[in-house]
Image (cartoon, rainbow, N blue to C red; front, side, top):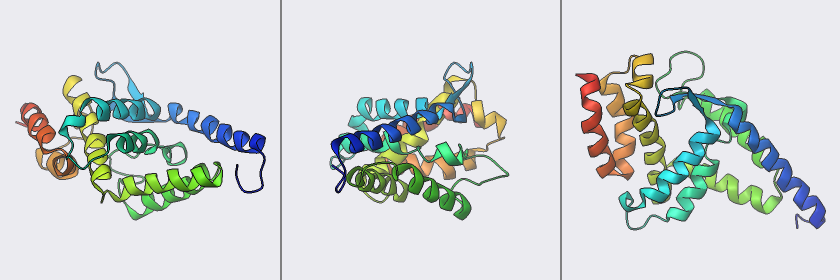
Length: 200
């Protein structure tokens, strides 16, 4: 129960959050499905990343809690309901990782997690902040997966956003590769070798 609230009020708040989260399915990303037929939405991306964590758990360091990683990945992009997708290779508008983007995302987190009862609000907001900071083993691995999933989509779809945004090998290494290698070096070694022909 949230403070002096009733069980009914708690459920109303929980469902308000869940109904708001449904809007993530309408946020379109730059990345396509692996078959290249259409762009994915952020809800699909979050589900796919949770599955990545489940299947690729053997690529994580021994001190990584995969259950926490899955929880992070399910909520990591909820702020895109307000901010939209900010592609890592995009130019113009909000820039990925910029001060303006981070401020907009923090404001979105205030609103969206603020719909929840206080205990859940605190727990999920803290989990989102942990992912964003990428300093704990769990968050570092989660970030690695968040970077590798679009790479796989690009590999499977004939270049995808690499072609759209004229991405260079150096940009792929600095914007994506370093993040993947930090938490899952074996994944980056495998993916980098398969990406190389797209940049030769």
